[in-house]
Image (tube, rainbow, N blue to C red):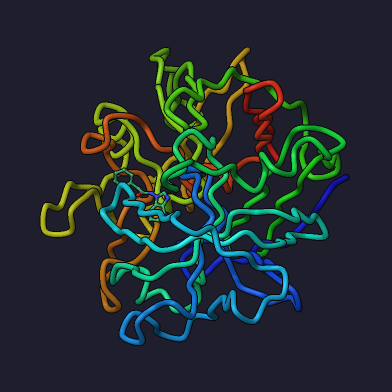
Length: 331
Ligand SMILES: O=C(Cc1ccccc1)Nn1cnc2ccccc21
């Protein structure tokens, strides 16, 4: 079996949403595929009105195939301190023609203000590893883990684009979606993340390759690229107008600064992925400003590097859960 679904970026590529069908008859929600977490949760009719702001709600009572998991609950807090919690139902879920008939659907009773404010986002499909699923008393499998045994190949791929729709595929690799070769690197899933080691980086075409191992996770649910302080300093040191602006909480620079170099990161056996400098001028610091908040920021508050959407949209990525490895290709 296999599946394929279009993803669509919200403004500034802050997140990428995809249509998902839940229940019988199908209820369609727009969900955020998040390889940085492992809960499948949705806005639901269990929520208080005050927490809803235009989102589409999953109504388990309107689904003939929904069964409540009595005595089960969930509560998740993300790295940015946003959170959600609620009850659990088993129901049928279809993403891009791929159906899982008994998916644990986590129906929200409570969401933090960040989720309420994001009216286009009806919930998350966590495609990290199931060991960090938060359902109690027994953790539940991710959508991919449930689908995997029936797939042609135990992989899913992410093709995120800058300011344009891309695609998530399940169970196969579309050889037309990338150029050159796919370089595979081993994944350590013990923390539940797609964790891997980059051999180093290079700033611009003229810079030398810096052989420094960078431990981090491939996370579609994080917007920015959070890298070690020293790497940020090497990159921003090459941009004439760049500075660390404590009032903005990060590095900023003039959006059109022509000295902005591309950023290359190593993936293994000599391959590098090029992130165009334009991706790193993330968003204007305010409407009238000429300065942009950097798409690359320090990971010092996190403890590991996060290869978020800024980096992922420069590549075609194979999340190979069958072999616990990540595949990287240019496109
Ligand atoms: O939380 C983060 C980014 C982050 C910030 C600070 C420390 C560690 C990580 N990403 N993320 C990944 N999945 C998410 C889902 C919702 C909100 C944020 C999400």
